[in-house]
Every structure is written in C-alpha cells, then in structure tokens.
Image (cartoon, rainbow, N blue to C red; front, side, top):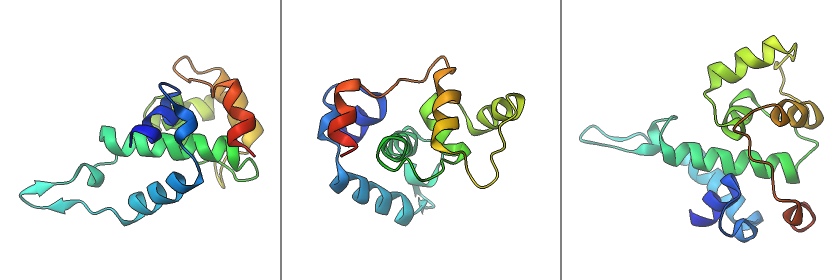
Length: 130
C-alpha cells in the first residue's frame, strides 16, 4: 500500500511500485467486496481514500507503462484529483470525447492543464516504462 501511495502521488519512494504490485492491486480492486452489513469495507465505497489511492496508482501505471491503452474518465479523475463528474464536465468543455476512452496523448495534454495533477517524476519515467 505504501508503494502504491508513493507511486500514485509521487511522494516518498515511488520507484518501489512495479509490475508485481500493479497486478496485485488490480486483482484487489476487481475482487473487493462491500463488506458485511455491520462492517462495511472501504473497498465497497468508490470514494474511499483506499479505493481512490489504489485507482490513482493503477491509472498512473497505465498512463506511463501502457501508453497504447486508452484511459477512462475515472482514471483521469483520479490523476487530476477531482471527482468523476467534474472530470467528465471538464472533458466535454474542452471538446474531448470520452466514449471508448481517452488516448494517452490527449489525456496527458488534459492532465497538464489540471491544477492538482502531479506529473510523474522524470527520473522514474525511464525506470518504470521499460
């Protein structure tokens, strides 16, 4: 979790996040339950800090290591540190169509204009994208 947080928000030691963690986090998000009635799980709440952190880490990994894959509005929202509705509205305002996903280049240009977007550290780009 610490490696995912550091990678997601580019703090601490983000270089610790690699393909092994990416797969584990993806499986965790896909297989998470909402918990039980008396003890809800933060994994069942898409707005919980836990899910947002994991989603942001995976979105950044996709942005940097899987540039051929389009990003979803939710992934862009995570990276821009905004909610999905606000991200969708901003995309529409700038004329970006999100149906089918947003290609990497368009996503990068849009993210660069977002005030809260934290770019991936330059020194990590050659390490993580290889």
